[in-house]
Image: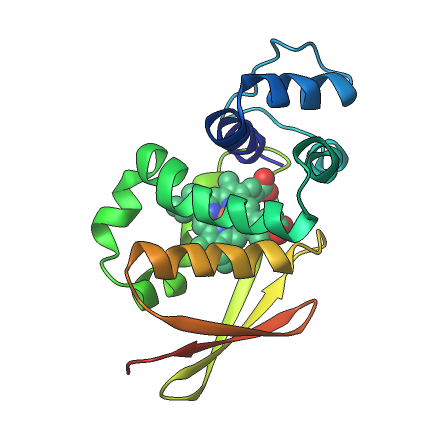
Length: 175
Ligand code: HEM
């Protein structure tokens, strides 16, 4: 997976929990404590998951807490700094959601081994949007947390109901 994901996890841990916790995480996962992940690195998926899965014990949180914190941090702190262009051109929650397949394809177009997730959208009625998630990585809970983060960014109230590991429904308050 692209290094930008784990770079963002590292920044989140350092900012919210302190440098020492991130060093501890690097250490237990076999990295030097001064290791720096770069945006364009190609990090093995298994290593990304190992790092994320080591965090509950190090931080004393549940894996769901970590996923929620990541979704919030990626959308509200990290990606507006690095990928601010998208936040300029997509000015509403719905626009941004529908642009996610294009954003992923754009960002990973020239990166060997990047296999971004894909999404298929179906309106069930004017307030309920079904989102199907396609990826072999089984990270639907991250997708849900990222959409929650986006709703916060655009100041919109939504509910999300997970259907299974490849689909969830977003309930909007306004049409
Ligand atoms: C500025 C916004 C975003 C950017 C730049 C971005 C970029 C990326 C990149 C580069 C990856 C790694 C792909 C790879 O290495 O193959 C990724 C993974 C992922 N993205 Fe995004 N993303 C953004 C927003 C979102 C949103 C809003 C969602 C919610 C649906 C989302 C869902 C995911 C998921 C679930 C993964 C994990 C990989 C997988 O499931 O296969 N992303 N994203």
